[in-house]
Amino acid sequence: MNNRHLKYTLLIGAALVLGACSSSPDDEDIALANQGPQMLYDKAKENLANGNFNGAAKTLSTLDSRYPFGPYSHQVQLDLIYAYYKTNDQDQALAAIDRFIRLNPNHSDVDYVYYMRGLVNMDAESNLFQDLMGIDRADRDPTKSREAFNDFRQLIEKFPDSKYAPDAQKRMVYIKNRLAKYELAIARYYMKRQAYVAAANRGKYVLENFQDTPHLQEALELMVECYEQLKLPELKEHTLRTLKLNFPNSQYTG
Image (cartoon, rainbow, N blue to C red; front, top):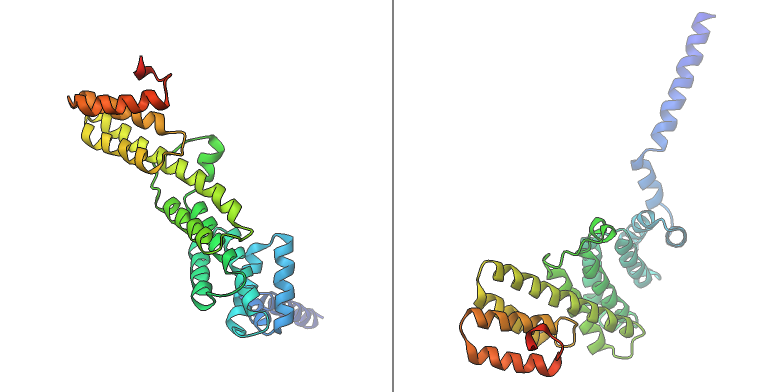
């Protein structure tokens, strides 16, 4: 009886081990890879619809690598870009975007891809914690904002009638405002250190490049103060005239 009980125990243990192994990630990957293109695509679409973007990205990547010239190839690549974007995988998203544009420059949905490039770059510099806490970090590196601005600009220039163009235009206005705030944050940093020439140049840059933002008045006022400190009366008076003409209620115009 003891030997028989021991055999049953060993058999049950072996079955449990085999069962655990069958559900290992490696076996799941093999099972996924062995599915046909239709089943894979249906699974990916189901994951996208359910908000399982990590699962969708994994399935779409498998489908893209196994059937690069299949009937769903273009749509798979478009869905994969979106899945990477939703999982905040900026590097993979940008790689997929650049690949699609390079291989399909005349595709009917290439405007969407340019739009997604802007979204990916725009989100790349966001900080969820700072956003939730209402922390304004205007002095953070704006490299990704500049890239996003160029992406949206290309979309509008290449595809002015695209359905994504209006939203891209709105995002460009937001980005210009963010870039102007960055320039002024740096200018204020220079002023604290009495680097008035550098500060004035930052204000002048805002004046020349971001006239349609709400920060023009601050830029002019900053320039007036810098020219006062630098003992440059002609530049100061010229800037003051511009300030009075556009913002007569400024404290500097009294």
